[in-house]
Image (cartoon, rainbow, N blue to C red):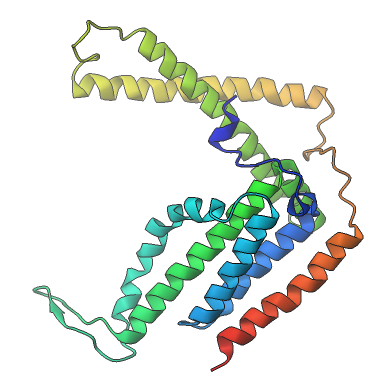
Length: 264
């Protein structure tokens, strides 16, 4: 099973790894919400939030640049907010005539766009830190303890479980295709573009059928092993004094970031 295709958990003996998953989920949501509530252009507050994130990386024994290097995956999605540059508020910076439309970027729009970009970047880094320091069954249990809808947590758990099944079946089909597509050295294997599209369509159909049949067998095996509707974990999930202290002292830190952002 190709677990590293989806599971990004990194096992370390750190205080952040030992923290109760409920506390980590609450702090992650609070951190993301804090970034969302900051006004546009709060660069000092954004810098303070990033320093907090770097400190958390170091506490987790991941290195300062661990989440930083993996956070750029969010940039293509954040760039979708580029239309904010042409906000009618603020002072005009230029005027671009594109035939039937005129684009006018403003200083207010530029600040808003880069603020959205930084918020997304920081939030994605915090989410990466959460999944890196918390095993997936513990995350599901944390959501259940925090009274998330049972149907939602069950769907997420099954989606996570069967992504591995889908990946396994896809790798098997690709290996079978490579084994049946041998060619002479120096010659391109396979046929025309139409032939490749046809083979890809057949593989997709086979992937669906084989995954469906295998998922049914897996579900029956789970029932035979006592599955009752939620994923079990070996961790007791009891709040310790260190968990309460972390939660207690993290709230003033987030409030301080808000004060830095809103203070003019």
